[in-house]
Length: 251
Ligand code: PEP
Image (cartoon, protein in one colour):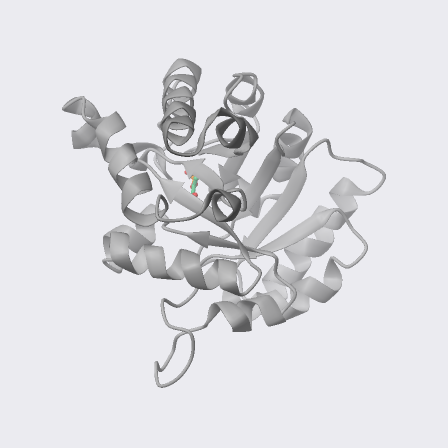
C-alpha cells in the first residue's frame, strides 16, 4: 500500500510569530484525531527549526519549500539540503512551478536539487505540471513526461522510491480553477504508467502522487476519491487550520 499524504505549502506567507500561531492552531485541530495519511507542512526556511520542535511527538511532519542546487560554500543567501535536514525537516518540495517560472529552475538545476536532497536524507516532493497553453494544445502529457525524464529518471529505482510526486497543473494553482476529478485521475494514471515504463509496475504502484491546484475543504474529498490520487499538495487552504484539517480528514 502506498503512502497517502496531505501536504501544506505555505509559500512566502507568515512571519515567524504568525507561523507559530498557525502550527499551534493546527495541533489543536488535530488533537485526538489519528489521520489516515501522512500530514506534512512545508514552511519557509526561517520557520523550520522552531516548527520542528513544536511538532515533536505529533503526527505532523515537516518540509522545506526548496533547497539549494549546491552542497555548500560561497552561495550567499542559499540554504543547502544539509542545512534543511539539520533542522529536523524530513521532506523538501522541489520543482514547484513558482520556482520554475520566477527563478528559472530548469531540468538540470532540479536534478541537482533532487540528488542533494536524497544525499542528505530528505525525501523530495517533486512537482510537475503543465501551463494552460500546453493543456489547450493537448501536449500536457508530453510536458509532464519531459519533466519526469529531465529531472528524475536518472535516479535508481531505490532512489526513485523516496520521491513523492505532486501533479500541479499550473493553471489551477492559486486561481480557483481546480482540475476536474476526471482530469486529475487521467493525468495521475498517465504519470503512474510513465513511471511503470521506466521503473516497473511495483515501483509505480508504490509511488505517492499528490494533486495540487486550488484543492480546498470543499473539493478535496471528490479529488481524493480517484484511485490514482493519493492526496494533495495544498497552498492557500493550508494557511487556515480548520480548512487544512478538513482536507486531512477527507484523505
Ligand atoms: C501550491 O502552491 O502548491 C498550490 C497547490 O497552491 P493552491 O492550493 O493555492 O492552488
